[in-house]
Image (cartoon, rainbow, N blue to C red):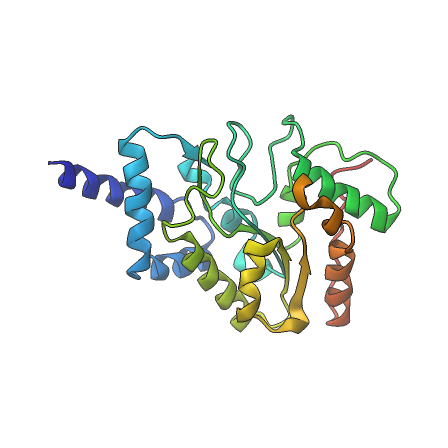
Length: 242
C-alpha cells in the first residue's frame, strides 16, 4: 500500500512540475528530460518528503518559476547558485531572489553592494525581487532546485544536479553567446561543460565567502562579455533604485 501511495504521489509530482511551466520551449525541454531515468529520483525524492509531511522550498508550483519568467528565446545570461533559501517565506523559484517586502538576505545584499560599487550607484536597492533581471534575459538557476526547511543542501542527492547540468548544456549548445555567471564552488562545477570564453566565476556572495566575492567584479564582467558579442548589457539596477 505504501508503495502504491508513493507511486501515486510521485506521479502527482510529475504532473505538478511539468504543468507549472507555461513557456512552450521550456515545457518541451523539461518534458523530454522527465523521461530520463535520473528524473525518477526527483519525483520519488519529493514524493517521500510530501508523504512524510516534511516542508521543503520553494512551493511546488514555483520550482520551475525561472522558466516562466525567462523564456528560452530570451536567455542571454545564466546566473547559477547553490540551492534555495531554506527558511520559510524566502525561496521563490528564482536563485537568490525574494519577494518584495521580504528582508533582503545577506547573499543578495552583497550582490547589490557589488553592483553599486561597480556602477557608482549611491541609491539603496528597494527590494530583493529579481524579476527585472529575469525579464531582461537572466535565467536565475540554482544547482539544486529544492531544499528541506532549515537544511541547506539537503536535496543534493535527489537528482537536481543532473537536471541542472542538462539545462546548462542545452543552453550552451544552442545559444553560444549566452554568458554563465557561476557563483561559488557548487556552481563552478558546471564550468567543465562550458567554453571558458562565456564563463564568469566568482566566490559565493554569502557572508562566509564575502571577502573573496568582493575581490571580483562579476556583474561588470558579464556585461563586458555581452557587449563583446554585440549584445545589449543587463541593467542591474532598473526596477530597484529610483
